[in-house]
Length: 208
Image (tube, rainbow, N blue to C red; front, side, top):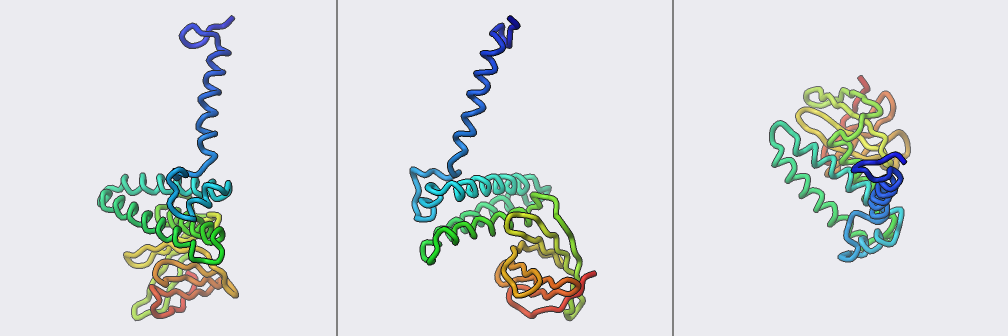
């Protein structure tokens, strides 16, 4: 018999390890939220729906990664982390408003996918699948850079001037339209695009 760690038989050590390794997997079958304390119809649904529970776990991991990135900033880390936590609380409140819609499940699922895309794009949690640069007609030429991410709901990081926004793909008659915050959008039509900041003027852009 070959002894394991501490003089114990190796097979007992492996069995013990397997039992401990299985415990987290079992614990991760449910959502990240505490189902015993579910306070909204959205949370109750997540606790009953395996697919939504998996989405909830995935988003919790994305948020943890984003928070780690915020806390690791060279400057303004505390402020960035506080803002991220506040934004997440606001998102949870918005998710819980899904009870007012005709399709609770579809609303909750869409909320999770949009939020995942936003976190990935804003905090660069993945390598972008593609990058494009556009020159947009404005009072002074505006250069826009879009970094595209292959999240389940495709997302994009929009950079112009000293500003950054995250946008997610929405249905469009043609091309690819990415909706960001407060009416900001990029409508990519191949060599041409339309860009608007917070519902303002629609700028004609050409790919650089």
